[in-house]
Amino acid sequence: MTAEAIKRVQAIIDAIVAAEVVRIDEGPQKSPTIVNTMIHETAIGDPNNEVLFFGWIDSDDLRYNLKFTEGGIEHCTLQAHLGIIKLCDHEGDLIELQLCATVPVPLTIS
Image (cartoon, rainbow, N blue to C red):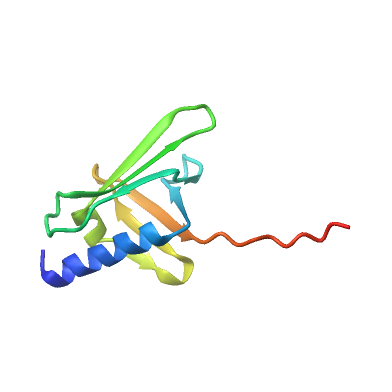
């Protein structure tokens, strides 16, 4: 990877880590879910280096996880205005992430 590609990959990792909520959409057969475990590493320029790990437990108490490599992040597409990143996981499946912030909901209860 070029120095510019490493910098881009690291910037995307940093943006994902900075999000308050990461929503995963794995396609039409699965419901979108919220990540509850995230582990990340620093990009070093190796496309096969696993730098991002997400985990969650669904409503049936089943555990799931996804891993992302530098190569999968390097070739991602962005919809920056929506906070969406489309990238391939370590198995080559296209995954859509939406980076979100939490906002207090004003209550108007009397």
